Image (cartoon, rainbow, N blue to C red; front, top):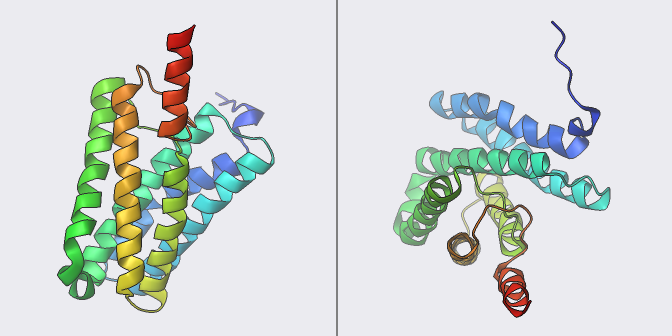
Length: 198
């Protein structure tokens, strides 16, 4: 029996997101095998593909509902791997500064659980604050595993990430149904006001 896949699903952004999902167990194995070098290399590749899939989708107008879901699923997997990798490989440098990191990790768990409870699915808002945060986090993880721990960059990354996660949670509480590519709280409130004025 042949399985037919629609051509519009086989786009470069979707394949890059799918790569992040497929490679998740391999990167997890590198952590379990205590292989920091291969973990760092593949995590950085994940971060690069995360940047590329969004850029390609926007530039070539390939943004789709499926692409948003694949991207969000790949992002969640990458976050999980990065968090575990930090605790396994970099605990000695992170431990004295752990509080804001734990706050961000907790907020990430809350927003995923809230999305499942309210909408029955993984969130895929793609907020501007979240995208910028992704670039900052990617740069932090790259410098952490490729060079060294820089406290200023760490605190900037964690506080920006906390802000983005709080915006995400507030939007989930406001909107009646799950949407993709929401942009941010400003746009959600503006749309809400427009609907009230109609």
